[in-house]
Each structure stands twice: as structure tokens, then as C-alpha cells.
Length: 314
Image (cartoon, rainbow, N blue to C red; front, side, top):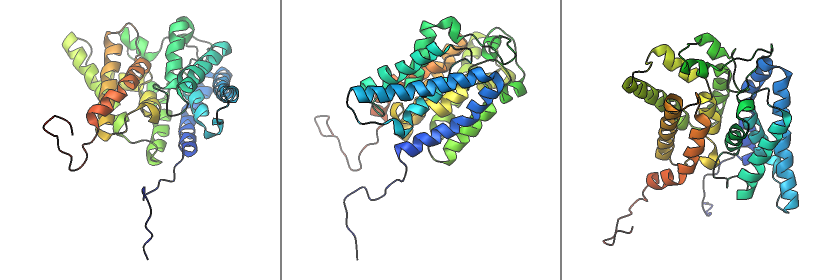
């Protein structure tokens, strides 16, 4: 006997909660290394960020009488992603302000999960960078020594040890220092099929290619060591695996995802090579989020058997 039912006939077992939980687990290696490298201050920043995001979402939904969604782990993930983009020296008041901005202004005021037009955590980071520039660029290691990030040194003409960059024993934000820890988390997401490799590979690859092209034209450094330093330092890897792949703010079409990754790569390369700041991942992804509707419009697959009429409409 045949059981005839309405579509969809193939159903996915994943839920918002399971996906968000996987992302949270994938962030644990880089968060753990950040706490190990920067000390208890990093743990405080992480805890304050997560608690702020969860509480703000709960209070907003209680006040506006909306369904309670804090148990889907999305607020936790927002708090964790915000935390990996903050220095361990960030004061708790600044972390609270960033978490509240991410959840209330960027996420909930636009309809909640899936309705936000840009990544809430990155929007909050950009907001904090503009509002508290000096505090957001205060990088101090666990031994109390404040130093420049590898990208800042690279922009000034100084090279960094590649093994140190790969392992993460240098200055930077809590979750962007260890390339090894980030790759472990990214591999977990790929194995669990939470993300595909299209956006990360297109983003990382195009960033390095555009940096190489721009430096070749302008007479800058085009050495292999320089390119690898660009890959391992800053927020490129973290942005590619954990932020650019955000479901709500990235394209759903395969071609759109590749184009999106290339756009992010171009923007990041321009910011890093021609901009005043050594980093540019956060601003690149935010701008890329705004371009997603246009990217999807020009990459949406054509329906099978569809023909254009004489009037130009399909």
C-alpha cells in the first residue's frame, strides 16, 4: 500500500535548538583556549556576555508578551560569538551594553531569530568599536603585558612566528587568537553538516587572493610568509566558520554562497590593505549581510520549464 501525503516528503531531523547547540559546542575549543591564554578575565567576559544576551531576550519577550525563545540556544550563541570578538580586558559594563544592543536592537526589534538583517554579535562589536575604540583595542595577555596584535605588527612591516600564530600565543580578542582551536570547531560544524564548506572556503580563499593582487599592484608584500600571517591572524578564520555562515544573514543558494564569500573576501582585503585599521572582518561581514537580498535575487535558480514571455516576464 502507498501512503500519499502532502510535501515535503523528505524531512530533516535538525531543529533550531540542535543547530544552535552544535554551534555553541563548536565554539568551546576557541573559548577554552581564550580562557587558558588570557586568564579569569576572559571567563568573566564570556559569562557576562552570555547571561546578558539570555536575560535581555527573556525580558524583551516577557514585556512584549511574545513567545519565550531563550531555550533555543540562539541567545547563548549570540553571547558566545560576541565574547570571542571582545578583548579579555573589556569591562563588564561594556560587555552588558554590547549584549543588550545585539539582542534588543539588532535581533528582537526586527522580529527575533531568523528576522535580523545582520549578525547581532558582529553588529554589537562594530557598535562597541565605534563607541569605545581604545578599550576595544586594549589587548593584554595573562601576564599583564599589553602588546599589538599580529595584524597590527604585520601592517607595520613586522612578521610573526607562524607556529605562534597557529597555536594562539599572542595578543588579540578572546576567541580569534588560536587558529588551531578555530579549525577544530569549524571541522566539527562541517562534519555535523551544520555548515557547508562553500562560504568558508570562498571567503578565506578570495581574501588571500585579493590581498595578493592588491599588494602586487601597489608594490606591497607578496611573500608566502605574509599571506600565511594574514590567514592565521585576526578574525578571518573565526569569521569564516562562525559568523559568515549565520543562517539568517547568509544566502541559501549555492551560487549565492560562493558569491557572498567572494564579496566578503574582497571587502576584507580592501579593509586590511588600504584601510587605517589592520582588521576588517567584522565590517566586511556586516556589509555583506546587507547585500544578501541582492545576491540571492541574482543567484536564485530558474524554475524548471520556465520561459520568458514576450513582455519580459516569466
